Length: 110
Length: 115
Image 1 (cartoon, each protein chain N blue to C red):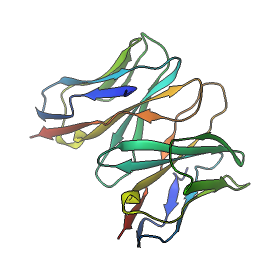
Image 2 (cartoon, helix red, strand yellow; image 1 turned 120 degrees about the horizontal axis):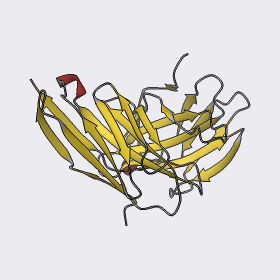
Image 3 (cartoon, rainbow over the protein chains, first blue to last red; image 1 turned 135 degrees about the vertical axis):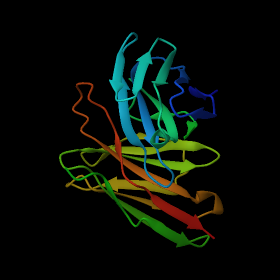
């Protein structure tokens, strides 16, 4: 059973059309939840870490939130340069590995 | 600050060969993790090293091994390559101070193709 599930798998938005990406997780003890952005052929780029339910973090047009079962990445008024795959990962207290979801592929068209 | 560097960036090998990939972490980072990324399985954890000790290992066969040197640089080795080992191999470093600052920063990856 997957510990981390991301939805939707793919999302196409018009420039300026806000939306949210979902990451649901199942872990026994959450050390942290991480959001990354990955462009084709490149390594993931760190965006946010969330540690406890109710926590929120913002960076430019992105805002990440966390509950006890899921996290959302809200994208406000996206631009074509926001097109990328967004990855969610969890880290448990039992170790240091990041357990990744399969990602959401976002395409923002002009 | 320079980011995580990985060498080589691209490799082509044939089945049965072995390969060594190298990773230099961000200066001051003592934790290095390795991940395999494939279209079907996504990003999967291989192993993590801290101060030359392997602390965590993922669910991969023994053909996959790694090590870390005293300067925190790390290498991973894959022996007896199989077609299914074709993937993007990513290295990530973390300061991992133990106080909750656990962000992992990734390198550009090594693209391995097994023919």
